[in-house]
Image (cartoon, rainbow, N blue to C red; front, top):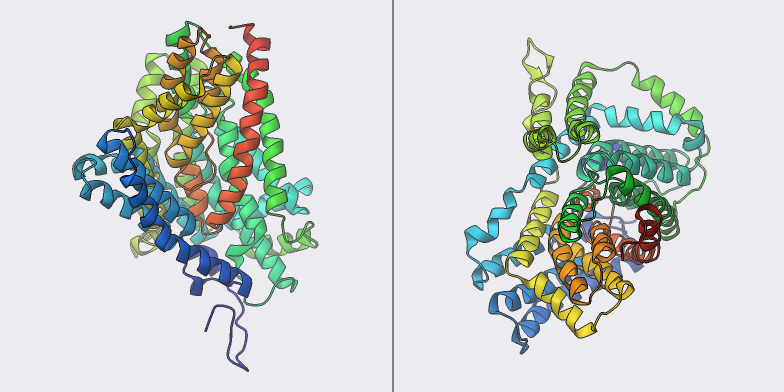
Length: 540
């Protein structure tokens, strides 16, 4: 019996929306989803094709007479096969990444210790801590309380479109000063709460089937992708918004002697970010059109739900304390950057010691220390609750970090960049800028945006200099584009968090991400040279 079939006379079971969101997972088999017959046929075909296509792609590319060192050749073949696995999902996406890591070691690309070392990245610990905090917020109803507050705002709550846009705006503004990953992590529970509220409202008004799947709503996809992509857009606004900005700025200053001040960066980036945000909202709402445009009766519904929530429970207060301390510590280095500057000793010390991954796990640890009933030794969260977080997403992004590290350490990324530039015969600022943006986006699709900036910017600077061109604009364009890569969960931590919610199917992430990649690339290529000229004057 498929997910869409029932025995004659069998009573339709009413979906428990709250339980569906608490139990969401990165990967669900076909039988765990509510699919239409057409969707089920497509999913079966997609996964069957991938099962055979992935090994074929890997073997064929590995046997091609390509003029590459053996390690680079095998890494490229394995990575292509893994990308096929990620896109077609014949096995759970985290397992696809693990298969690739196993192949890297078995085929001798690098030893096991070298391959697995990047898995200890601070980002992995950010995921663990943030997911545990999110679990507590969902369990104790704090996420629902925040969601009700947002929906109660007059200019937001009556329109699903405005809900999506408002969440994106909040995310973008916060991520300009707080880590993109941290921003998405702290807003994730509220986003899930809002999607759950909309799903419950649809259910109560009989606008969906009684046994509908609340994790497959288009409005949920729009909210989650706006959360992830909005952070990437907002992160471009300041030099401290995301690590690629600092990496790119440092490399550009070293190569050209042109210093980019904090205010200058913001003046250049603000119009680009604003237009990117408009483009983002248009793409997501067109491709993931919410099931309903107006949430009729939402004010009465929210008022009723808020009255039922009552006053804050002890567990909610404890969760809010742990969450607030974590967020404050995430924000603090950005405050120091604004006041003392990113080159000060104080900023260096604070940012090193208040690492976002360490802060995340310490903040989550407070949930196991703050009691709800001291006499009974009951605390805010039990380990059985924490163990339910999405470990699949943590595995998935860990494997993505490994591939990104190997792309750099084996020299494959540099080989691809230099060979492409040489074969294309780039001789103008415009052409090199286009190449820089495309290369940065392609590399950031399969590795972190930080790794993308660290690999691509050092390639673009000598390419521009060899052509007798000032590398400032092409290198800055590469820095901006390194924060793109919206098609896969491994592209950025925020993509992985959104995917880990269980609300965003991989096919919808690819479709939406590809569309926004193209629009974002065009905006960078067209607007960045203009803004550089306006703010800094001609730099060549």
